[in-house]
Length: 65
Image 1 (cartoon, rainbow, N blue to C red):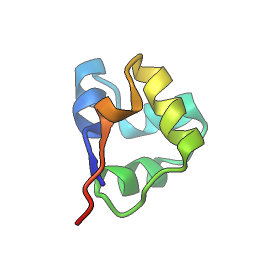
Image 2 (image 1 turned 180 degrees about the horizontal axis):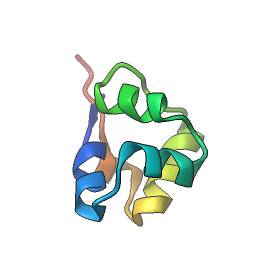
Image 3 (image 1 turned 90 degrees about the vertical axis):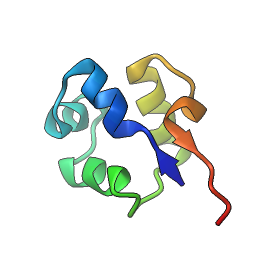
Image 4 (image 1 turned 30 degrees about the horizontal axis):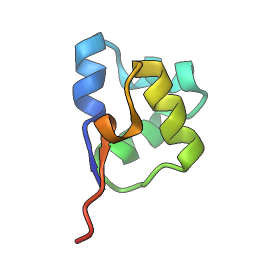
């Protein structure tokens, strides 16, 4: 799955650590999502979307490959 999480973080000028604290996960989770090593749960995807005030599909793009 493609992710624009790093782009949205940059737009808000926040660190991985700050984002992790804000949504209740570890920094390692944010790193793994940004590196496309981890697909977040639906609950986590909703938390990220709410935090950035966008739709889930604005952050995550499904790639069937």
